[in-house]
Image (cartoon, rainbow, N blue to C red; front, side, top):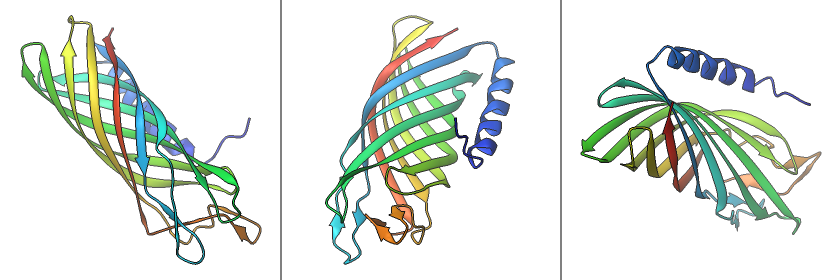
Length: 198
């Protein structure tokens, strides 16, 4: 199994936050699924190459910092399909690893959430290379708590990733199926899931 050495610092950082979370009173694990909409790519003649809205799955581990706030490590994965310049179907797989601060605004069993996150994004092109870039996210969500241990969660999240538009991400030798449009990649997702406290 090939391990990308650029992912090691992100994994170490996530491990550090999780080990601190274990010392907290309770851990909360959330699993969410939904749709993610990404930026478009461009061809060598500057025409747009549309990326599809891919299904995404997210797993979060959170701990209570205080009654109105949580710390969270969130992993989110999506695959965007596109048809490149060579008229072949290709895909761009993105894995986000973020540390988030989550503010909780309670109204009995209903909770509104606001989250800010920072971390990294691993981009892996099916016909090309893979790279890790810095990224940030902001999210607005809701929680409906069925009990003290379980909640239904919904979330709208936007990711902004600072990329190097000159990277030959989608190139094999001298043939490129697509290019980045600019130095900021935007993904936005809508997701629903379950959160369980242990």
